[in-house]
Length: 365
Image 1 (cartoon, one colour):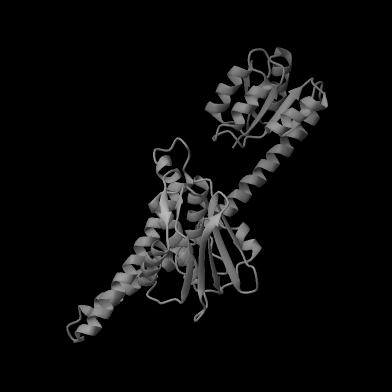
Image 2 (image 1 turned 30 degrees about the vertical axis):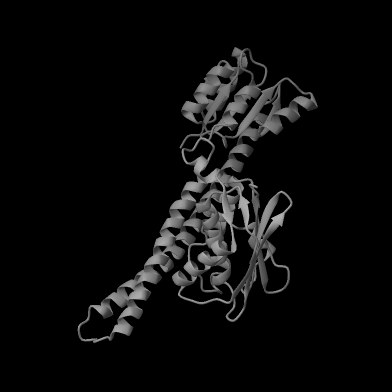
């Protein structure tokens, strides 16, 4: 495919000469006689590269660059300034705004070609790297999805098949146990699907989003009773009992009740899943200045500083080494909700084998 270049230049001779030479070298060149026209063509055509003069009437090159970099569809287009301005402050201004290169007038055609090829090669590398990341993401998501869905569905189908087989002759206690396991599998599958939908919503959340206020405002009360209710719900879904202790002070927080409950459930669920058997999970909630700090500490799968920097949707740490449930989006959901409410999430390992997760939120009292 022919590389498309947009040339924005108000000087007719320079514009025509550069366009002709680039065309002879195999580029498809579109031209604009001023900044206003250049912006229009950039947004409509989305060229592979933009060459733009700085000093133009009405709309100058800096304004063109500002529009290009702040539009999602054109933000990554390589942008080279053509300018007679050589003051360091002028060059610095353009680079800070996102220009990729400068060519000072007068320039040779060879230097122009070199600059164009360099920027196009860099853009090609960026796209190749992005493609590789997307492939890795798709592979990871597919692997996690198949495992998570199959685990839940295998439990549901397996127990349902046994219950519908008249030759089995299960007694009441056995039947109740299998029905309970079907319920556990269904709850796990529902939570996974709900979390995928929530994560997708939170990733697109901006102040203009119709549900922004729902997730970024409100108030509620944290208490020992609320933590206990979350623990009981999680133990039912995980079908396991965990030794846990809590020292949670009651306080009014600047976070809606449903979002507070979600954050607590995800943090507790994460700690319960990755704790070693017979280890106690400790939860502490206490005022901290103008805010409130909830901390949960468990002993189990190690959490390194590198893991903390890599928290992202659908990322699971050491999956090949540790059996894991879920999609690896719980902590990402917590961080997104907390940050929408001017709070913060931090995770650290204070000592070998221990992981401490903490959320800080503003108090509402």
